[in-house]
Amino acid sequence: MERIYKYFSFFVLGLLAVISVCLLTLPKLSDISALTFSEELTGSLSEGDSGIKRDSRLFSSGINTRYTELKSWGIARGKNGELPRADPGAPELLARYNSIYLGDPDKKTIYLTFDEGYENGYTSKILDILYENKVKAIFFITGPYLEKEEALVRRMLDEGHVVGNHTINHKSLPLLDEKGIEDEVVGLDRRFYQKYGKNMIFLRPPKGEYSEKTLEITSKLGYINVFWSFAYDDWAVDRQRGWEYAFKKVTENLHNGEIMLLHAVSKDNCEALNSIIEYARSTGYEFGDVYDLEKLARGEG
Image (tube, rainbow, N blue to C red; front, side, top):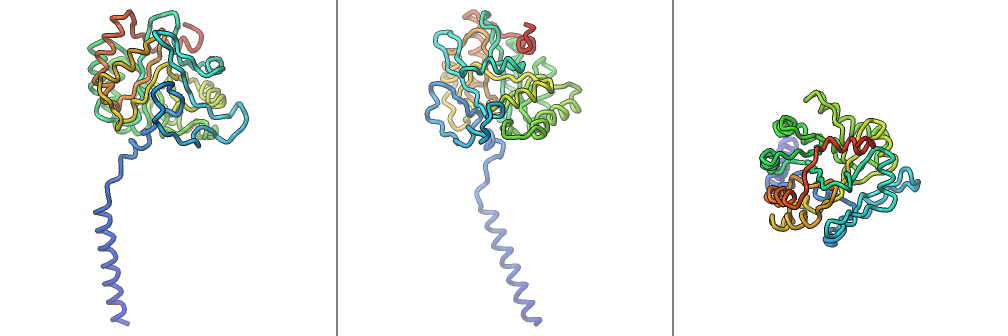
């Protein structure tokens, strides 16, 4: 019996050694944040996105009522300064629940917004550029960003920017029940208030996915859902194409009342931002006070 125990011990030690070697030689997994945000938008971006593969399961919640149906925000871009076209009925639905995707179409005003799912090293430079150009933006952050990037969030607030709600875990809100929606949205707001003594006003639904139900619930909670009238596939960090591409893509699509969505993980955006701001101003546009979006959404602007 003693000999059996002895061999068994050798066997266990050998097995543990093999497992240890395997663990040490396994390739390192990609950062979970980068994986989560590798495909930010599931809606239509109009031209130029035909190469992006999407999971068809994201387009339908499997619930067939119009109230709970998952919708994916999409726009068709205008040309030569024309306003983009949203999906039929979408602007009216957003307006019903104090939500917004476009500012005043009669004013050459741009509202700048950034989505901050995770930090990729460019936000500090982006803040420098905004400070130098006296431009204020909304930075939509997630739960991990709030916990890991306190210095950057504090700087956003100190320099007059707005910090918006992008939920705790970046889950598709239409696929959650009412409690799940509140946990994701109000949960982040509570953490933010505990740290900075302020509540969040603006909410950007993860992936641009929404339903009438999510709009109604979040509106009753006091939030303004902020969609966008311009975006492009800038969140794909492995598909950066140079600052000139970003500059051209953004400046070719400037329009009145624009709510511009850029992702701060993009190297191209960071390098093009100063030129974008200078060009927009040279053509008569100005960057508006992002707090005005609340007034416009509530019909007070």
